[in-house]
Length: 234
Image 1 (tube, rainbow, N blue to C red):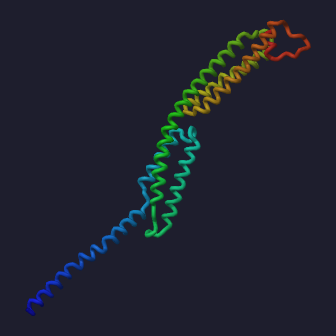
Image 2 (tube, rainbow, N blue to C red):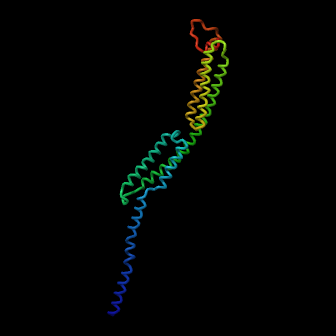
């Protein structure tokens, strides 16, 4: 019985010796997982950051800063906050780094930029249509002005005629600036310039028409001061 007892003791000893490494492995498993998690968190989410930056650049290329400026400024603010958070985390020891907030900001910036890209593209097309319409109206106004200038008598006051022709030619030249703005997809500028041309053309035309109306009622009195347009039609 003593021998058997010794054999049982030996068996139990061997059994416990065999368990010790396994027990230790199970004990170390949570620690290992925790370390792996910390290591993963200690690295910035480079892919997400690059994806966000790419989306913002694409939104900018589609005119987001021009057509949805307020929303685009917010996205840029998110990107700035993201970069600051990366810098803050980089300054910490590996054990204490956590780029979770960076990843959240990257996702927010990317989704927001993609939305702005779509919205800016839509507004850009609307601006293009408006610019083309304004250009057409301006062209028609300039053409009408030249038609009125053509009624001027070259034998009356050549200086006044040349002056009014110069005004009309300046308006015609300005139309080239409208076309250049359209060619470079600067539709807001094109629309603004076209409206200005239209307004100036109308002003010149009204002046000429007023002179024609005064002449139609009879020659202005000698005491009345004549405009340069009056001198063309008397």
